Length: 209
Image (tube, rainbow, N blue to C red; front, side, top):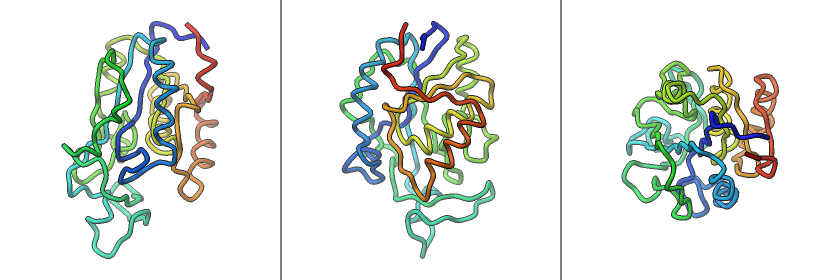
């Protein structure tokens, strides 16, 4: 697949807490780094996202007495999976993995910093209406095709891809540069949504410029 000058690589949440040994580790999460570093030089434009939660974030199970991680509660914006405390602002867990060396990235977008609402997507908070500003940034720069990679495939990567399509961008997920949580069938569910929305799934070896 051709990488045009209007393409952007969106690297989702490759942070210590989502990698092995982290508070919300995705299995083999650090294995996304090698393919990301291999393809990054092909892109003129790179954006990184960073989960950036306050310590008492409403998505943490610890904020709801009697609840356990991975249980679900109803929030004003809909169902919310409760997570272990992770990616707390100004902690080592929130830092990018030390091997993720992308000095030519042009933007770091922090998300999930509103205490009362979670944010999976790079484009919207979980109410699906509060924007992060990323769409405006991409449009002002004339970028119209988003290539996505990182963590986790079935949550933050997937939600970002679906929102990119909803906003009129082309969305391509580099599957070998992602890893999934697969909580209660989440991979199968989101891949059905990818098919319906026109999200393209490829391997990074298919990229060319």
